[in-house]
Length: 79
Image (cartoon, rainbow, N blue to C red; front, side, top):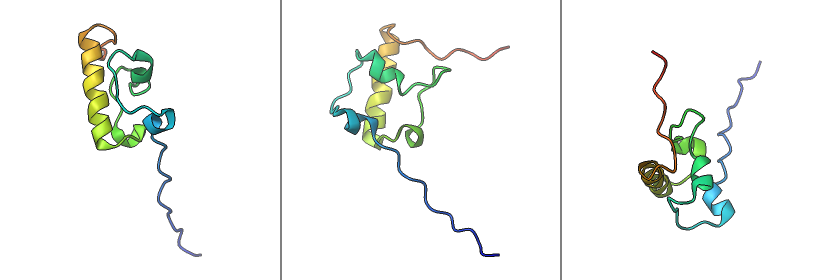
């Protein structure tokens, strides 16, 4: 039996580059919802495919949108 060679996983396409977006706006709720999980948490960079700088801008925009009551905060778990 030959050993199985693991190929590195294919890089995910950057959703901001695909859409041609250069600046992330906190008022664009439909865009920001793509970076939030169903539980309301901000998705990790390895999941979203963003660069570290873009991930920071998206996270700040999500926090600002939450502060302005455009997005909901994550729900607490069942207790």
